[in-house]
View 1 (tube, rainbow, N blue to C red):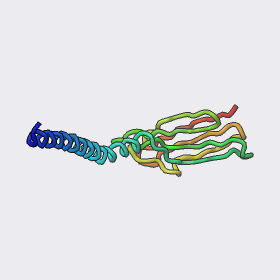
View 2: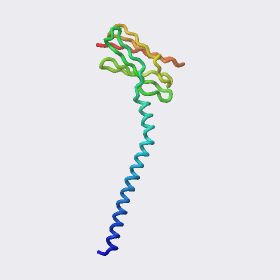
View 3: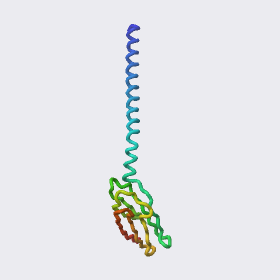
View 4: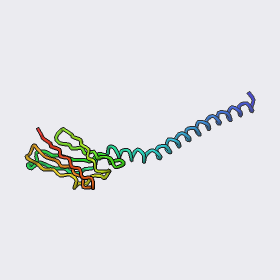
Length: 139
């Protein structure tokens, strides 16, 4: 093996290493760029579908039971709002058509009949007035 052949082999090995290094850097850059582009989209979808906004937390007169009321996500294109009520080990979901407006704390009221029974009123204060009554009973 002459000096030139050994030198040529070293050059070839360096080219192969350089090619793999370039490929790794290129793929890493593409992945980072894709994450930077997709992050706002994923965050927006989470806000629209799954994020819980607390509207009301109410305790029974003797503080035995608690009802937590949340708006789930945000209405899309003048759509309905989804409201989740958590009480005890149970949950109940209802939808209220409020013309795409986010619900406010003032749109929810809880009236306790006794420690194990409550009446929840969900009302829309916009021009399309809709009201929903939901009865909750603890057992």
